[in-house]
Length: 82
Image (tube, rainbow, N blue to C red; front, side, top):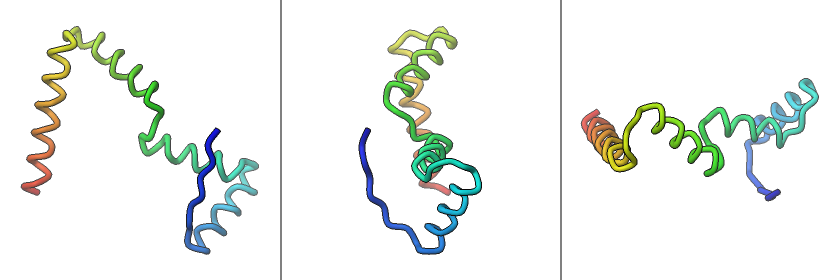
């Protein structure tokens, strides 16, 4: 397991410590769950999700990639015009 050092505002750090004590969970566990809720997942999890979506869509790998590229380009274009 990797270690990470972060810098937090003192009041946020205190709130995190209090939440940890109240919930009976470690600060590391609270942060890890927060990351997962924000969609930050291990690569293997993402690969599994993509494979499952592709199977359910019944698209070939090439068609799935083309669709992903097309939708990404459209989203980036809409972000630029917003």
